[in-house]
Image (cartoon, rainbow, N blue to C red; front, top):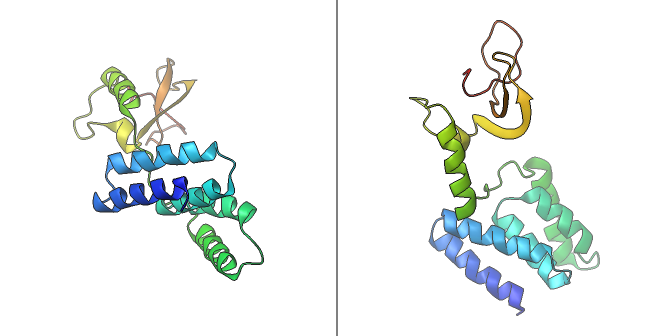
Amino acid sequence: MNEFLKEYISLKEKFVKHHENEASVLALYEFADRLKERTEKEAMEVLVDVYQLLYMMESAYKLYESIYDKADRKQIKKFLSLKDLNESHGDRFATPRPLNKKERLKREERKKLLPKFRYHPDPLETGSFIEGEVKICPCCGKESNTYYVKSPYAVDDVDYLCPVCI
C-alpha cells in the first residue's frame, strides 16, 4: 500500500466518523491540493478517489479518463460508472470547500462592512451576495465589489445591486 493510499484511508475514516464535518472536508481538500502537484500514477488514482468522496464527479471522470488502463476490465467498469455520474451529476453536488482560518477572518472583516439585514444575518455565507470584480451600482452609481446575485425586483432591468441599495 502506498503512502497516498494510507493517508487517504485515514482521512476517509475521519470524514465518515465525523459525518462530513468542516474540519474533515477541509483536510480532504488540502490533501487533494497536495496530490494535484504530484505526477505519480498512484497519487492520481488516489486523487480520483478523493474527488469521488467529495462528490466531484466531473473532476474524477476527467482525471481518471487520462490514467485508466483500457485493458483492465475492473478499471473500465470504474471508468464507465464515473462517466455516468459525470453526465448525470457533474460537480453540481460537490461538497463545498470550507474556509480556512485566514479566509474566515477575512470574511468576518468584509462582513462588518456590509449593512445589517434583519432576516439575513450572513449574506456572504448563504451566497445571496458575492464578491467579484468592481462594478458600478446602477442605483446609486457607487463602485462595489460585493453585489446581490439574484435578480432584484425592480421597475428597470437590473442585473446586480450593491448591498447598500438592497
